[in-house]
View 1 (cartoon, rainbow, N blue to C red):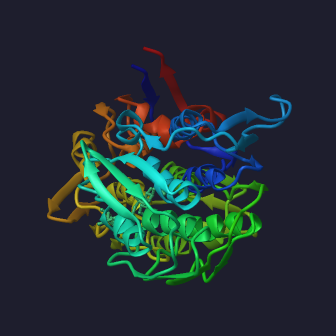
View 2: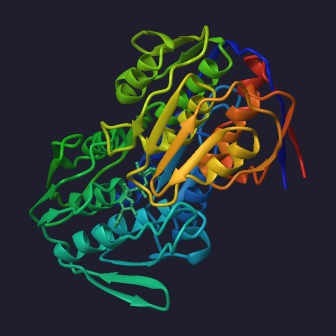
Length: 423
Ligand code: UD1
């Protein structure tokens, strides 16, 4: 297994380009199941989760082709679902990537059948799929749990009014895809408002769907009989952008994060400003000039447009070396503080009380061998390693590879002393 080695203490300087959004790309690739026509996508990041999604789609019979000159066309793909012969998402793929569950809506919507493994628990909590299933059932699907698989059937889904008890990102996406080919109109109330929802609706509308209100808490989908092909470039990854911004602030560097969408990072950027981090915000770039210590601020993760749970671990590192005491409250996932104990091993002063972390800023961190436990926790350890004194060795970096494209290359180019040891 690969390891990441970091010699801390280098100030980051220069420019870094943000990759395409993982969380936008996954449902978009899966939406190719909704049409027999070819779909062209650009800006798909080179990540383990993306490869898992492509493997899943190929297994269903979707043709996947890398497009363009490999030297210039990074992340260009053509997907065509004209010979779908299998309606099943197997356990070994769903368990490694929960987003695989998103094939359920499009398979049911277009072919009237789907057999998808239940994802089970994951490191950051139970993460059930009850809201996905409730919505599909209200659209007329019959769903049974058979040997760990959800088997769903429907002659043709019909429009329905669906209320989500929680604004789940995945459930909103799954239901939007299913409803696009249903008979009649579907209304999703208390829908998730994340930028990735708006992005998926944009793609579906380009394919001929009739979706209104995506990005607000009520999404209306008028079903159509068929959808057609599309060409689309995915939005930049707001979480990757946020991670680089924290890296720059931590090392008191001077970094321009290019291709970022500041409008997708409002709550995060406002919190950084409150912490005294100097930011210059352009239309599609953010410059971070860190001079001096950040001030501690309190953070509560919330559904969008609130502070994103996917940037909580990174902010915890910044707060670990800030001036004062910060209270970080995690309201989205029940067990998303596993990085805290690893940060404590590096000298951070963090006390956990249920879904709260009380972080007392310390003078500095010291390098240590640490272990990545989930995707966002793993990047927080990289960030901690960048600012720590001495050497940090991170194991289980496959979590990192699920969501950060060429991270060691990008950080090295900014001056970090970071290397991957292949194992
Ligand atoms: C997506 C993101 C993930 C992010 C999360 C919250 C992708 C691929 N992943 O995950 O990076 O951290 O949004 O912003 O886009 N829930 C239920 N029942 C359900 C569905 C969800 O109780 O049927 C709960 C979950 O356990 C969790 C909360 O709702 O506590 C939010 O989950 P959800 O928004 O669905 O997250 P994902 O779509 O899995």
